[in-house]
Length: 175
Length: 173
Image 1 (tube, each protein chain N blue to C red):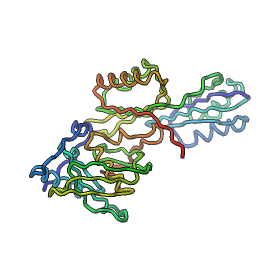
Image 2 (image 1 turned 90 degrees about the horizontal axis):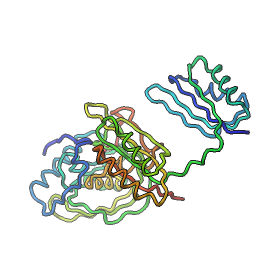
Image 3 (image 1 turned 180 degrees about the vertical axis):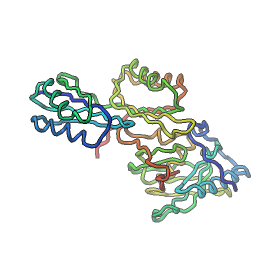
């Protein structure tokens, strides 16, 4: 397990379509381990996708239980390979930030309830039913696997783009 | 009553808006719409006011009352201008900062017959590789949407910047 440096835009891997893992092997497991290690090492970070550590693979790690006020009923650490969004409903606008787009947060509309299916690092199937902040985090990570950043999701020019006051204010918005 | 457009620009200091608005109130003008911003210490405000004043007189009164702020003030009749259209598309453009991104993208918009209704630009993370990001709202006629999409894609490719454009869907709750 290694703490990797987090790629920032304009690193091209962040804008590409990540490749499917397919059969889970040692490489994918090592990437998953590094994602978890790097996520926990980054203050306020509740999720990280493989392109953010420079790996164009469809893998992400997420853990919203580390938030100051953990959302009730959350799944703790979730690591998924080749995740698919099976279902999404509801709509809510909330502020998001991203470790790969520093100094920036913006209001983004996301589904409030999602069902996501993928493989765990040991190769078994896992289905996550999430709501609220955890559902938002999942959608943010899924976006990373398709090369989509928060700047691609902004909803209006005037009110949705906010400059962070200080880097230390990142709080729990990072993913 | 007529509509007057009042603009004031200068170095930012506390009290500018209060001084300008006080003059407008004292002269019986009513502020209908306004937008103010500060960029790097520079203050700018645009106001649409309903007023019986002669534009020249109002400008003189505003200039006198705000002399301590050193503002540049302009007042003109605002009538007879077309009502701004609701934006139809939202365009995000971002990439490594370099001169010409704004010019290139807005030229493409203009050539496609699109009108910019709102524009915000920012420089992100001013380290050795700052990122230029802008969010533009535009209005375009339905029959020009394809031309708009093609023009923006071509311009962004030329400039080497990323972009995404989507239709603004008005939702009523």
